Image (cartoon, rainbow, N blue to C red; front, side, top):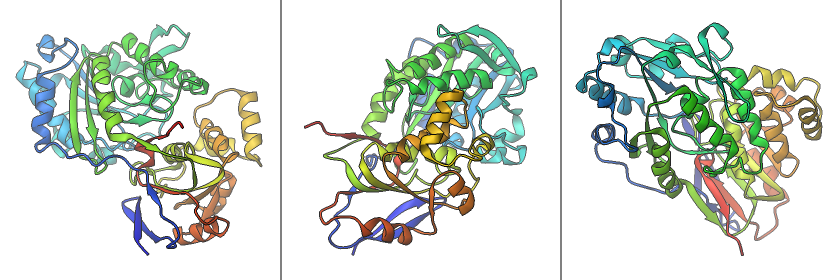
Length: 421
């Protein structure tokens, strides 16, 4: 029997399948990394797309650079130093520059963990702030989107003369793709702004891999324009999280150039739905908590037949990632109750994870391998299993000969599509 493995936390889970199962690998394409990533970054920022140049901002008195929190595998050690070097080259004083961590509604990052996000050299030279979406004193109101969403954003970012967002372009379950202005328009927004934008995930066009006519994503673009994000620096990563491309410049132009590359990396076609999928978000930090790991479940469920099974291996070393989600689940006894209550009470960030899971769990069976307490896992209406062998023993018991089995090692970063016949 062949030994298979999938990422789990900072390591892997290894398992074997019976000889009568011929699993299909559903994973992102193997693409070579650029040989000199920092040189590629410097080339991108010195040759930006979309008719904008950082040299246009020579002499500005304040620069705010938004960076992702620790839930995103952004290679800041390779992205930030060339960017800072170019800013200095075009005449921006380093004393004008500050960094803001884009946490959105995620838990606040402790200063002790800033070293997980940026190189020590940056920690020593530049001020770093952590966004807090519920701190009204730190937010500025900039008006409303055309859909009526009030735009509250981090005041330090809004008041800077040059506003830059650094991150990665990759698939997103309802925004279509991450990247561009999203790190500011959502990552540095107030809770009300995030809540109303995320409520658009209920639109049938707010789906994985859809961008230009995705209402949730296009409102993000509009919010980014209201904020006035000048410049974005985005990397695209291969399955080994190495840089394969870097794009910088006008945020919308960056997305237009980057999305086809992201599709080339992430889009995978399969012939038919699977009876069983063994999925991983992709390891740490993709599986840092259940809030993030749910994305892998959603992508795997897309290509799992009704009444099929998903085994999700997600370490969740930092728990659920949302206390609001945990509290909202108190006393809820079924996935249908989750769906009914959510429709009754209206959209709320945090509890929205409950309904995302419930919509899949009413159609497929889900087993979760994680470090979560088993009682908490059951409270969240998920079935805990202690290890992958136990999960496979249960799942294979009722699996017919000739069953279609898939393995998704980077499910959160994969756009799976079933071929139309």
